[in-house]
Amino acid sequence: MKIARNLKVFLCSKSNTLVLLFCAKKQHRLVVQKWHFCYNNYMDSKKQTRKRRQDTKHAVYMLVNTNTNESYIGITVCGSQVNKALKVRFQKHVRRAVTENKSWALCNSIREHGAEAFSVLLVDIVRGRKPAHAIERELINECKPALNTH
Image 1 (tube, rainbow, N blue to C red):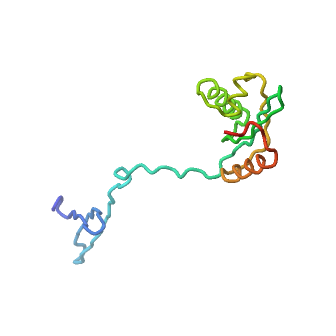
Image 2 (spheres, rainbow, N blue to C red; image 1 turned 135 degrees about the vertical axis):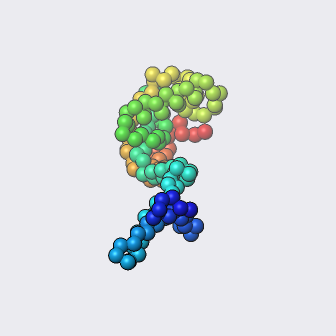
Image 3 (cartoon, one colour; image 1 turned 90 degrees about the vertical axis):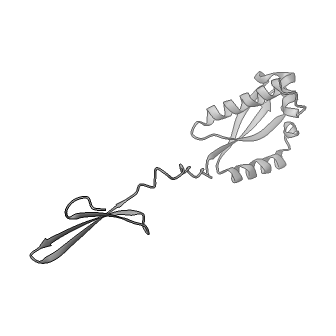
């Protein structure tokens, strides 16, 4: 394909690049210059999702019923706002106890004594899901909380 007098354009099939070839005669020598233009494959490729972090912060917490001194041990993902995460997680426990008809010990205790009878205590902040679950299991095995039964 000829575009200009001394300019030729080729599509290189091996590398999918566009080659501009400029030929000029200078003092009986042939001068060849090549310019490669690559096709932008970024627009055609699928949007790449970022790999999810494996070391997010988790809070190990304890819910204590102040009327009966029964406790519950759990974990939640907390990120940078630990207090907010604990508050939201407790609200989920309360909502589940009120809206769902679960016969779990924690739900029964929330229904019987009300949400105001509970206090939320932060036990530990752990980086990573597996270590957080390990600490939760260890604490449950040691303390034997009455409300952790399903």
